[in-house]
Length: 506
Image (cartoon, rainbow, N blue to C red; front, side, top):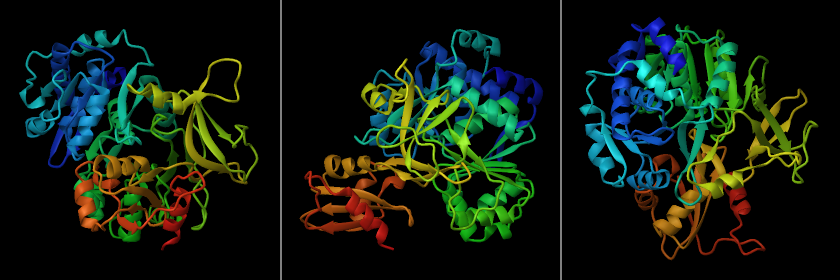
């Protein structure tokens, strides 16, 4: 918040957020945030506790997240498009002290809100007699840098998402390196496309608060009409984007960059999934003035742990490297025997140690202990690493290259999805089939269900039923009924067989 106080003094009258036909200055944004923060302090009086946000991405959601930080607590953004059952599971696990919403969404969230969780309606909060910033800075003075900054939910195999706890220090460390290296200033305009529940949005919020950049909210409905996104970027002279490649691939395939010039775009980051090099090269050729960087990191690593500034030519059939580690982060590539791999060409699991590591999963010590483990290379003192489950190798240029997943965790449409969660909902929660195996076709980016059932269900029946429990991006596209699913020698469904089958079907 010290960054934010300096920004308000410098850039108070400038636009902080542009949201459709509305915009808000830094001074007004700050006052709104302090008003909501005071309401939180009066209602909860807590520090270092989760506070949930149930709002669409908007000016209101931005100042509400800042309000939660002002109050000395950790924000947890919920997706208003998610099924209420999923929201209920998250609330039951995390147990936030309060949920911030507005009148339009209050009735919906109230239906799944436990009695002991307070509801703060921002439409009922006035900004009269709001304490000045010193009141909140005094509250924040006793916090330390490893206290939680935010909680981001990610897919879990039991049907309930895991709440990843990220602290202040890891964000500050990431900001320190990226701000210096990429030269962010108050003149930057952020084309903000990622949902509130993405860590990318959290970083955009940091740039806005620390540097006085303007955040332009790109409506999620524009994803179906990419030309509208580019038109909006041109209108507001967007200088920086940090996107998931899915929409960028669509833009390249539709040849839109030749139709809508973006002369102000100076910096493009992408992360979350593999960007096919052929489509990336279309972006690069179309925007010669733009610097591109490939970022990598699971949500358990604050934002990203590895990055690659693309400064050399990369052939269409060559994967884009994920590069090298950020400062205060060490990348360890381990083989099956937990020995470190250093030579080019050999595949191993990417593991991470350093400042960027998350604190763990909120209210979930078992899952935390399984993922955040002692460094097998260090037997002298406690040192935690995170095992990503991602397979990588070092190429002949010494660059780290992503190869694929070790287990059933995938990246689809920018979301990290545990395929086991989809299976759990279909088989155990909804009881739609006797048995099932969910796999992913990486080339076509399709989630596929192979299933055992007495009767064949239509895709429409599946989608309607699954949509009551899972968000749209987790619903399988294809459904293949079998008399009996193939088993391996251990009697388990032969997932490898169906994974290979799905990826051979083109």
